[in-house]
Length: 271
Image 1 (tube, rainbow, N blue to C red):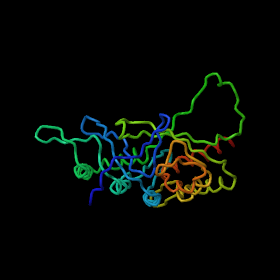
Image 2: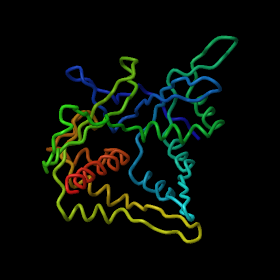
Image 3: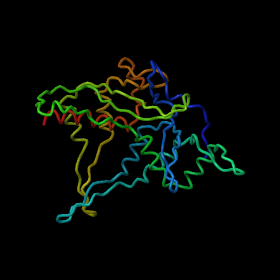
Image 4: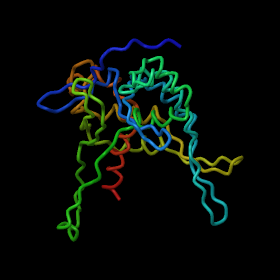
């Protein structure tokens, strides 16, 4: 397999001392890899994946639970399904070295690919901490409001998320905060969301599973999203006026994460 050409990652752009993430560019993600008793941090450079690539992989994911009398066994998905995604988009490691004549010498992209092929157990973990590395701060609590009954039904209209990325220009790991601004879902869209998640019983394995229609979930995100603060595509901000130009570049994992929070908030407000 040929090694992609290496160019400096332009994925982080700064404005008013705030970083923005360009979804269309090769991105460097900080990842801790277990190596014996050590966990060195490497910066994994990956090209963007397409929605269809992830949908094909997620079709293979089966997880759920088995119930036998009073015992419940949680069944996890096979994490090896993500390995092909790394193989297709891996470019190189940053800050990786090898011993040559007793000295530490920076590795080449060919060295880096040979390493992950030799230790494929790292591949799924890398994907989960890079492409699947979106995070959200825990909700803030105010002890003074513990005795206050909140009867508001207003939806926030925004989902705040972040991801830590490696910035080649500053040679630092930076936190990129993003705000997905969205319209309030209609009742019809909410019904679509409920129907996109179904429980299914697999008789041969006595396994209850939750199936997801990822194409429908993506469509729901596309329907309600307005803009994304802290994100760019090919150097242009993800504004409401240019939605058609950037929407297809938003990573599918982001869409699935955010759409759950949009419609999950609707559920909480209507309980």
